[in-house]
Length: 420
Image (tube, rainbow, N blue to C red; front, side, top):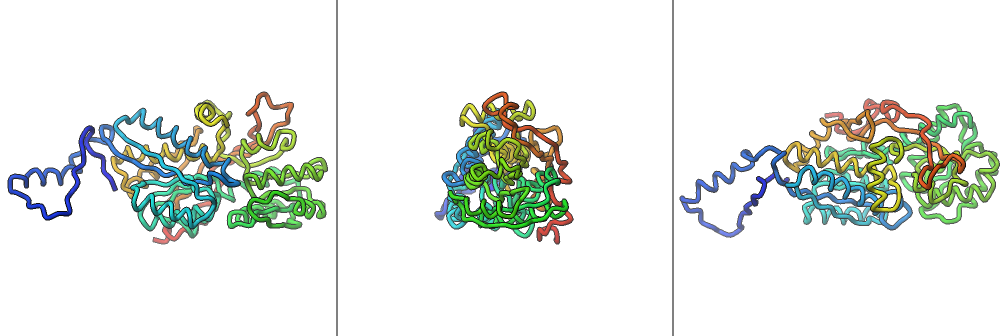
């Protein structure tokens, strides 16, 4: 923990040597020991805050978060420092390469030797669960803005862990409900824990809508050739093809679905974890009409456009919802640090829970006791080429799902903290 020091002041550091304290110095030392109790209000304080952005920066998921998450965090920091010029905020970043053991090694260095106060992004389910537990054991805060596993607020919850991103439940329920007229579904799933969670959530939603799951296949991460999986779906005469994967895997599957005639044949290809830059990379001609869930679209209102313009100027792309999540999460964390005048995890966590969560809308979100951030989500549909009025005018909002319907209720959470 580091408390705020008076603006322009310095923190004295103790010595490990056998220094003898002279009586004349005693009063000064006692006064110094009381300094934390006599600090000025947080609005007139100075602090050093260090935030780590840990993401997939080079793999199949790097476009969704990756280097763009660092850009989003930097925008949030600059906005905060403009309002709090006496506060020094440092950002560090690293590539976990979708390897939980590497992510733990990086987190260990950051937390144990480099005084990082909070870690964010944590794209990839295995990475996010491992780092959240690791940081929780050290009483450090994690805000996961790029992972979809609901285990972060269920069995894997910690007292210092926050799950900001939409999860498998939130991302599947809206699109499946929108396609309730499609009765025969097939799932193509990446063979990872996160993929299996998406598949299970999607299958549950399909059956709840009266649909039938006629088959499923699993593929390795980073599969370039999806032909065998697509042929398996085509052979079942499916009406809807759900993609329980992401990044280049989902893009490759969509392009293959076009080549094999599934799209022309009227099959509703539904990527369960998709982003606007993915639409741009795949092309409107191929993705037109596709439906997916989101919690941020750059052209939704004036506030979403303001952040998008700043991001675009630096990164030459519109932000994904993961990157917008990182921006919003860093802003929320820093506001809490300023409010309590400390980086002490317990105090900051309480302040974050007490404050409404700003997610670019008029309806603020909340942070539940299990660490789940809840907010309204949207179901969007990719525009046709004729509907698009510009290079990034790519989707339209079909409907908004209220927070209490977009996420499972707290009563269903399996977070061990709720039993205390």
